[in-house]
Amino acid sequence: GLTIGTMIELGVGFHPDLSGRENVFLNASVYGLTRREVERIYEAVVDYAEIGHFIDEPIKNYSSGMMMRLAFSIAAHLDPEMLLLDEIFAVGDAAFQDKCRKTMRGFLDAGRTIMFVSHAEDSVRQICSRVCVLSEGRLVFDGAAEEGLALYRNLTTSALA
Image (tube, helix red, strand yellow):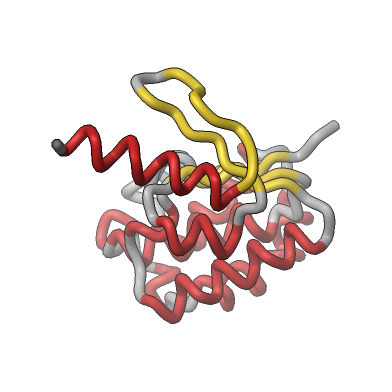
C-alpha cells in the first residue's frame, strides 16, 4: 500500500513524558514499522534531527524547534511515497529549514509526492510545482505555482483592505 509520512501538527503522535528515543520507536510503530525496522533507521533519524544528547530527555522539555526536527526526521526516514507537511518552516533555525528543503527536493526528484501547507511564499516557490489555493474553505485554484502564488497574494491583500 501507499506509505504516507505526516507532520500535520507539531507534537502529534508524541508522548510528552517519554524520551525522544522512546518517541521515535512509538511514532514509527504508529506508521507500521516493526521494532527491527525502527532500529535500522534510528541512528539516521537521530543524526538528521541534530538534537544530540537531548534524545534521552522527555520531549516535554524540548523546544518547538527540537520537536519539529525530530518529527520531520521521523517522517522523512519512513521512506514514504507521500509526505504531508503543515507549516513545517514555522519553527526551527534557517540552517535546518534549508536541510529540510533539500530533503524535500530529493523526495520530489525521486518521483514522490509532497503535500505541503504553507503561507511562506519563498518555501512554496522553492518546493512546489503545483499549488492549490483555498479561500474560505473552498478550492479556488489548482495549477502552476507562480500563478497560484499571485492569486494567493491578491486574496490576502484584498482581505486586509
